[in-house]
Image (tube, rainbow, N blue to C red; front, side, top):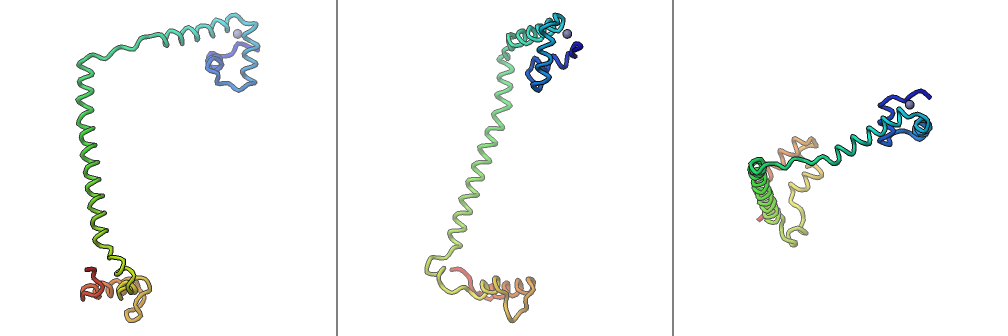
Length: 145
Ligand SMILES: [Zn+2]
């Protein structure tokens, strides 16, 4: 085997090669000091990067970061409060719109039947049915008390 490229050696070092390629490079490394040294360089670079200390952010940088974060957090709380208010309004509106059990089991209003089955005296198109329902509701039929 010729010397593998540095890309192949790097992939070997990172354990990213399929087993057959890995075995071929391992066999080459046993007999080739030059490639062995390249692999040792990879290990040295990895060790050096792992031991490098991360710089501590300055107090001013931390304060700037906190100041940029706070408005976003407060905006999030306000949005959540708005959503909860809207949800509560929907629950109240639905509970007011749903009739009591006695009314719910009563016969459906004419407009409700027309909405499901169509009204025989206005035709079967959705537009005609919708106009009939609006006219029926305007006349006060089927309104919820
Ligand atoms: Zn080699």
